[in-house]
Amino acid sequence: MYNNKKILAIIPARGGSKGLPGKNIKPLLGKPLIGWTIEQAKASKYITEIFISTDCREIADVAETFGVSVPELRPAELAHDTATSASFVIYTIEKLRKEGKVFDYIILLEPTSPLREVKDIDKSIEILLSMPEAESIVGVCKVESCHPEFLAEVDNNFLKPYKETANVVRRQDLNQLYYFEGTIYISKIETYLDKKTFYHDKTLPYIVPKWKAFEVDDSDDWFIIESILEHKHKYINK
Image 1 (cartoon, rainbow, N blue to C red):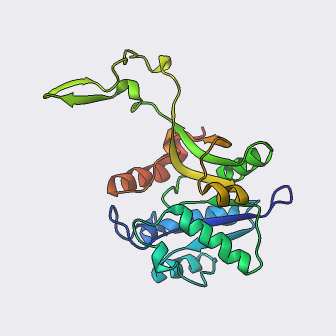
Image 2: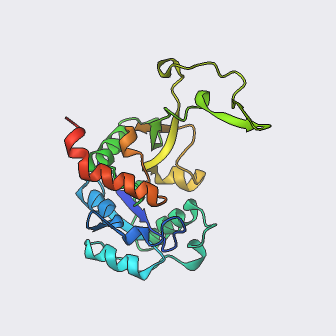
C-alpha cells in the first residue's frame, strides 16, 4: 500500500508460447522465469496482493512454490492467442471485486521482463501517485540504433531511406523517441476499466536503460538476458 492506496499486481503467464515453448517455467540461471517476477513483486514495499493469471496448471504449481496461491486457472476463452490483455485484466479485477477485494491501482508485471528490479516497481508507483493529474505510467526505453532516421527499405533491389526527410547521421542530433518495452504497466483501476489500456493522454513514462528493456520472446532474447543477469554486477551501477 502507498498513500493508503491498495495496489493489485497481476502476473500474466499463458502456457502456450510459440517463440520459446515453456518459457514461463524455463530455468533462467536456475530459477523459473516466472519466479524472477514473483520475487520482485513480493519484495515491493507497496503491492497489496499478487494474482497469477495463467491457463496452465504446471505454471500455477511453479508459482505456488514461490508462495503465491493460484486458486483457479484463467478461463479458456481468455487464454487463446487472440485474447487481449484487457480481457483478462478486467476479468481479474471484476472477479476479485465479487470476492470483496477492491483495489485502487493495478500493476501488470510480465514475466518476460526479468531484468526489472524491485526499485523499478516501487519508484514507478511513487512517481504515478505523486502526480494527481496522471492516471497511468508505463515502461519505455529510448530508441537509439533503430531510430527512424537510421532506417532504410529495399526498393527495386536498392536501399533507400525509410523516411524521405532522413538526413540526421549523428545520434546526438536525433529527436528523442521512446518505445514501449514491457517492464512496468500501472494504472488507476477505474481508468483502466474505462479506457481498457494503460496508454492514453494521461500516461507518464517510466524510462529504463537499454539493458533492462530486453524481453523474452525467443532464444536470442533468452541468451542476451541470461548473459546480462550473469555479468551485470561487473559493469552496471558501478
